[in-house]
Amino acid sequence: MQIIIPKQVEWILAELREHGYEAFAVGGCIRDALLHREPGDWDITTSARPDQVKQVFGKTIDTGLQHGTVTVMREHVGYEITTYRIDGEYEDGRHPKEVAFTSDLKEDLRRRDFTINAMAYNRETGIVDIFGGIPDLEKRIVRCVGDPMERFTEDALRILRAIRFSAQLGFEIEDNTYRALSVIAPNLAHVSKERIQVELTKTLLSEHPERIYLVDETGMSPYVSDTFGAVFEGTGKERGISACTRASRLPARKALRWAAFLAYAGEVNTVRILKELKMDNDTINRAETLVKWFAQELSQEEAKLRAVMSSMEDDLFDDLLLLREFLLPEERAVTETFRETAEIIRGRGDCIRMKDMAVSGKDLIAAGVKPGPEMGGILSSLFAHVLKHPEDNEKGYLLHMAGTLR
Ligand code: ATP
Ligand code: MG
Image 1 (cartoon, rainbow, N blue to C red):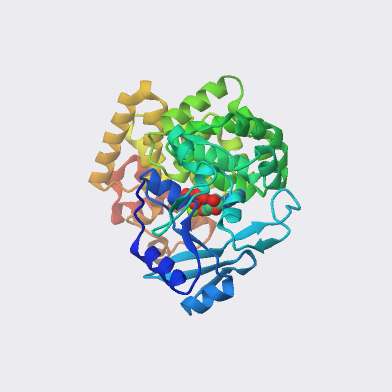
Image 2 (spheres, rainbow, N blue to C red; image 1 turned 45 degrees about the vertical axis):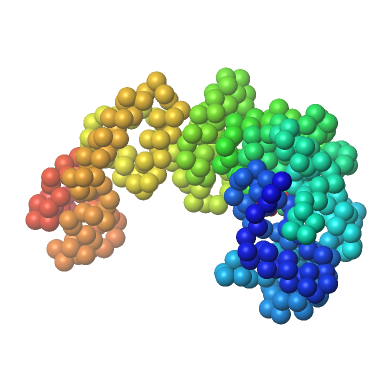
């Protein structure tokens, strides 16, 4: 099997080799290269200790010295170089108490989570595949390196990684590995909500977002968040899964995919789950808006549609239409008319933002209105009027109207 390595990576491997060290590209990048997928990043593993790596390259960044990782920059791209290591005993189901360096590549590969992630490559040696990563890639399965119970007990995040890789690659989870997921599920209690969220987000952004149902099927839901399981309950389950299946055709945007997953959970639960998972505020707000307006009938009336459009950014409104289009296929024709009407509204330049009104707070002050609640009230009334009658968005007219409102 042939692997094509970027020339910067070749250069790093060659530098280390010329200084007498072993060095390989390793992990996810080898998996992806073999699958003809674009690797996210190229990680390098070496027999050189961190101080020796620093000597070879001169300029490096200390990324995680305690784990043996330094970063070398080449043409604005960072490459992580990590010394072969054995992870010591795990103290809390998440963090190894200590790591020990080793001179044996095999030991370094053994500590990795899945066979497909435990391969290394360099030009001289070819692919190093001690744990059967290539046959598992061919069988399209996610399988632990070694005993799944042991490996998941060491680090419970791996149970979510198993689901995530299954979703990203469209692979099944090997039987023994799958069975251990349910047994170790309670250990997720030791994993930070943020790490859980990151894996779930990667699952939802993948080509098979519907595989998030594995989280519930294996009993992980209660450890994800209090109400996560409710998303899968009763008819919600079918709707949730079919929503996710349809979601796989939605653009892979974070709030949009989360909204598709939570569409039937309701606005309140959406916010609750995302907050509990320490999602960033911007994504929470966007997902909340999408779920809220997904649950409501939209009106065909231009004025009402302008009001909805005015309550969110343009790109979010477009995502709302996408969400409706994919999750409510029976309403596709109606959704299409919303899209056409929105195009007309935008094309005409109708005012749908307060900042685009022909009259501003400054103009009102100049006309003698005092800044404060009164002015706020007038601006809101003018804006409500303009949303209904965009043709009235004209300075003279609105100032006159402001006068009648005082
Ligand atoms: P991607 O970068 O596409 O998310 P990846 O496979 O590169 O996927 P990373 O999280 O970047 O995953 O980790 C790089 C490699 O480090 C993995 O391929 C795996 O060999 C190892 N690894 C990462 N996290 C763990 C873990 N929790 N337990 C064991 N090995 C891990
Ligand atoms: Mg990676």
